[in-house]
Image 1: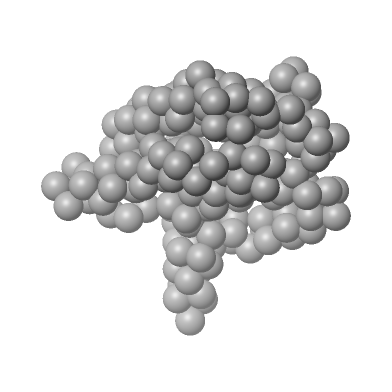
Image 2 (image 1 turned 90 degrees about the vertical axis):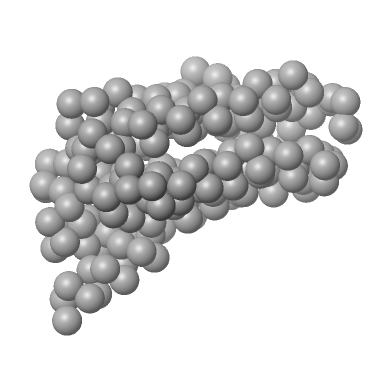
Length: 206
C-alpha cells in the first residue's frame, strides 16, 4: 500500500509536469501584462512541448530505461538537450524585448545548468529540487503566503526514498539547491515581486 502511495505522489509531483507548469506560470503572467498569443504559443512550444517530446522519444528508443530515468548517466543526454532547447526560449524572449520574462527564463536555465553539472557525478533528486523551486517561484510571483506549498516537500522526499530512487542526502540537497540558486539569481538580476507586479515589457509584440 505504501509503495502504491509513493508511486502516486511521485507521479503527481513529477518534474515532467512541474517544469512546464512553472514555465506556464511565467508565460501566463506575461500574457496578463500584454504579450500576444503568437509569442506565448511559440514560447510554450520551445520550452514545454519540445523537451517533453524528446523525453518520450528517448523512452521509446530505450535510451532511457524508465520514466524516472533511474540511471544517472541516462539523465545527462536528456538534461543537456533540454538546456539547449531552453536557451532558445531565453534568447527569443530577450530578442523581442521581454526583458523581465527573459531574466526569469534565464534563471530557470541557469538552475537547470547547475543540476546538469551535478548530475555528471551525482544523481541529485529532481523531484524535490523542481518542487522546491516551484514553491519559491510561486512565493515571489504571487506573494509569500504561497510558501505553504513547501509543506508538500517532506511527502515528496518520502516517496522518492520509499521507491529507492534516491538517498536522503540526494533529496535534501535537491530541495535546498533550487531555492538557494533561484533566489540568488533573482537578487542578482533584480527580480522581485514589485518588478513582476509592475513590469516594463516594451517590445515588438506589445
